[in-house]
Length: 116
Length: 186
Image (cartoon, rainbow over all chains, first blue to last red; front, side):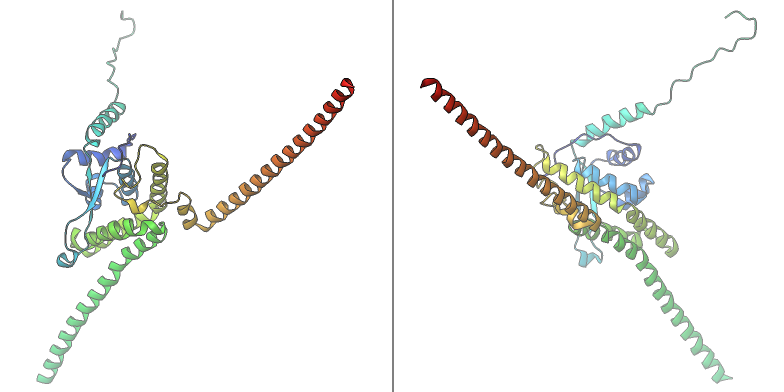
């Protein structure tokens, strides 16, 4: 069972992370992979992952491998939840709208004495 | 001349083997640096979080970084240290965030306890992570508890005192009223 879904206000850094998940919602992502894809250091990525997971936006699990056979410990993956996909799209749209630059105003340059 | 040749050849082989061993030794020690930093970060976590965060997530990720992500030793070491140091810097924030959200979860009627995949991060008692964590916080908590206890005692004593006063005043009023009524009726 996943935790109850809670609304989150996305910051630009959180938006970078959730955008990676939206590119392929079925694909599990790993911490280091997300660091590379978003360009965020571990110090800002992992707190956001914890926040997403606690709010029910992401679900996590461990790799299904035999550590002794593979010779390495199983890594933890994250995947976006079904409920978070539409909410993330809405939030990304809102964030995009918020940061959209204003439409450039076309200045009418008038010469001195010219009638407007 | 032949003896010198054999000696040089043997010496060259020894130097090659030794340099390989020293290289491996240094590489092994250098690989321990990010693990050491990560271990420091883990010490700053709550004890209940160390298993799920440090052992199950950070260590495998660092292992991946050091073994798989980059074959160049210096770059690999740099990425490993960068990863571990970032977590060391933010570990308090991560711990606080998880604790705070666990507490919100526990008090929220919408969330069923035990839902979270990181159930072991949640502590049964809301005050436990505070008590487990920092001695300064623990002292503050104890002081707060003492103040609250003394306040409670004072409040209870005042209540009792008021109650006794009320009873005494009531009894006196009752006595006056009774005597007044008896005088009137006589």
